Amino acid sequence: MANIVSSSANRLVSLDAFRGATMASMVLVNNNGNSQTTFAPLLHAKWNGWTFTDLVFPFFLWIVGVSMTFSYARRIEEGADRSKLLMHTLRRAAMIFALGLLLNGFPNYDFSTLRIPGVLQRIAVCYLIGSFVYLYTQWRGQVYTIIGCCAAYWMMMTLVDVPGYGPGVLEPIGNFGQWVDNMLLPGHLYSNTKVWDPEGFVSTLPAIANVLFGALCGTLLWRGDLQPAEKTAWLMVSGVALASLAGFLDHFMPINKQLWTPPYALLSSGFAFLGFATCYWFADVLGKKSWCGPLVIYGSNAITIYAASGLFARMLSLLGWRQPLYDGFFAAIAPPMLASLLYALMHVAVMYALAWTLHRRGIFLRF
Image 1 (cartoon, rainbow, N blue to C red):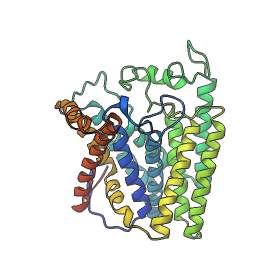
Image 2: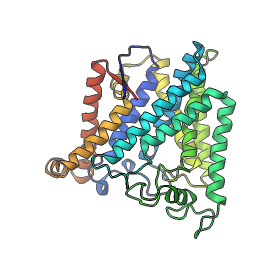
Image 3: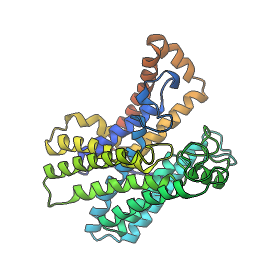
């Protein structure tokens, strides 16, 4: 079960605000009223390339890395045992993974076709592996792990001979990741694709890199020998360097969210550095925090809000309310693309109301 705690501890406001902005964006892009008439940035790229929507999930993984660094660094300084911290992480990751399975199966739990991968499942796995790497290595070890994960992925996707297709296929069907997913989890993959999964086995390797890039950011922020302005500069430089490297590598392997290619992991981590650096400069360096309030509230129960958002959308469909609500109200008052956006913003508002209620009562659900 989740732990219900009341928290008033001092936190890095910029990180909470960045988490809240990411969660609000996740709710927004997951709930378009009509995917056929939606603004392009609110849809995933069809295959290669990227949109705003493609940045949301890796941003959250990056935030997980920053957050775990702050949590572990403080406890290690207090003398906590690393093995006990890892066991705590294992329990928490198991709970997040189980919650993902519950959401995948709701409301009809047919275990013969239950999708096993998923967003929360990827968060759980990347969080667990990232925690292990952070707890038992220094920053150089984390860099080596990032390089190793990306290199291993690159070699498997380009060198392994996939039966019937050969090596180096980077299309939806015939790539090494698709072959592995279909071989290991037949019938338990994403329902829209059937024979491969965007959160599958092989693509988890570069996703781990997103978490570890966040951990490196956390290590930078934790340092006491740098002034806030210096930290901001390093964050900006890191963001530009990673995004530039992604642009260069895109000539050799495309930026692709569905495959979660290394250039995609680098690009999304680079933009996460830049987005967070902006929040950090204004909120924690200049002390301009008035704009952060709603975002901090939105991010204070992130996993809960994500789960509630999925359940809310599913219930609207199950009860037969979704289409009448969209057609009878949103499509009636606005042109198609704006109607789709307004419907998504309705979901954002409903989830904010839930987040505000929990925050006001001092309830923080820690999975």
